[in-house]
Length: 176
Image 1 (cartoon, rainbow, N blue to C red):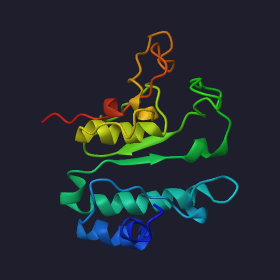
Image 2: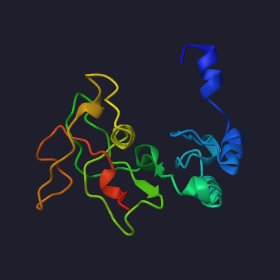
Image 3: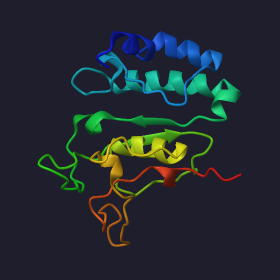
């Protein structure tokens, strides 16, 4: 991203996103970051503004049947919105793995009512992209190399094969 031409070609404004949704012209993967007023952080935003931002994107994608037929929208809160999380944090390095991250997936391929108990984090989105398109991990040392978690019935949130991070595939049913 140190190359200005690459930044200009790939970093777009939200207005471009809304136009691309309307035109059905989205790339295979898009990351959308709301501005400070709509980002959902308790200190700088209101949750209803974040919800409105997400709703506009979801409604737009669903209004385009061709786009909706092949889309998964993954909504995450950055670090749980700033609230303390008492759940298990996998000890990966000096900083651990951070708090659990609330996520919601909106797609015609999601399993209705399914709640995943697999250990996941931000890297799970990257692992989903890699699994969905059959791509190799970014580097040999990145966290997307970790195995998918194996859990026990006693505590499904604590991987028995740590370090492990899920790829979100348990949220989907792609079969025809």
